[in-house]
Every structure is written in C-alpha cells, then in structure tokens.
Image 1 (spheres, helix red, strand yellow):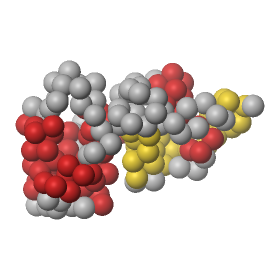
Image 2 (cartoon, rainbow, N blue to C red; image 1 turned 120 degrees about the vertical axis):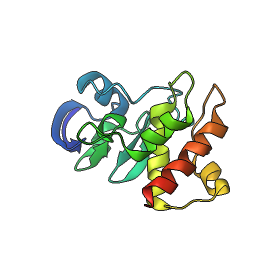
Image 3 (cartoon, rainbow, N blue to C red; image 1 turned 90 degrees about the vertical axis):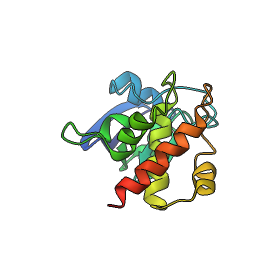
Image 4 (cartoon, one colour; image 1 turned 180 degrees about the vertical axis):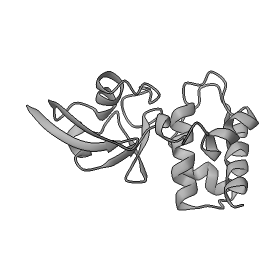
Length: 156
C-alpha cells in the first residue's frame, strides 16, 4: 500500500509516495539518487547501508520507508559541508582506511555515530562500536587508526 512519507535528508525536506514497506535503502538509492549508501547483506549485519537518523545510526536495508516519517537523515553525501569533508572522512583518507571502498560509507557513518556518543573512545570502545560493520578487505587496523585520528582532531 502506497503511503506519503515526509522527512529531511541531508538538510533537504523530502516527500516520497511509495509502498510503505519498501526498504529506505531503495528509496535513498533509486528515488533520491543518493547512491553512497550501499546494499551489502540485506539483513542489517554488515553496516554498508548505515545512515544517521535523528543522529543515530540505522540500517536502511531493513528499515521500511514509512518509519522515516518526520526523521532527519544524513547519508554519506550529507556529511561534508561547503565542500569540506567531515573530520572522519578526512581521517579515513589520511590513514588509507579503505581498500575497495565498498564498506567505507557505512564505516564512516558508524564512526561518526560512535564519536557523537563517545568523543574520546578507547581502542576497545572503537572496536566494540564498529562491531556491526564488516570490511571484506580486512582494513580494520587502519579503520581503527582513522577513528582515533578523527577523535583526536575533533577534540581541538
């Protein structure tokens, strides 16, 4: 059944009319052309589809679009401001914390969410906080370093 859903994505008020049970991921990628958010597993187990919803990470592959009503969403495309990358994005680049890059948008979103909740996490807290994100290239050591770098830089 089609429903009309109103939400804000990357600072832009958005209205979509579609099947309310359709995954939010499909709406972001297909209807809104925000293709940075990736489909990975379809089961909320890999983190590739992560976005921020009212400041907290959600998995869009298992979130029906009807649940986005009234939310403020931020995708990987919405993290940079005025052409300047978010500090987490800068840290991922500086540390080479990506290989194939497929998981990177979800990793960055998860790291931003983690640092919002815990601005100065320990290495163990970073590992625990990133636990629901998978990197098939096994870039985890560089990802942890990037998050540590971002945390240090954001505290200035």
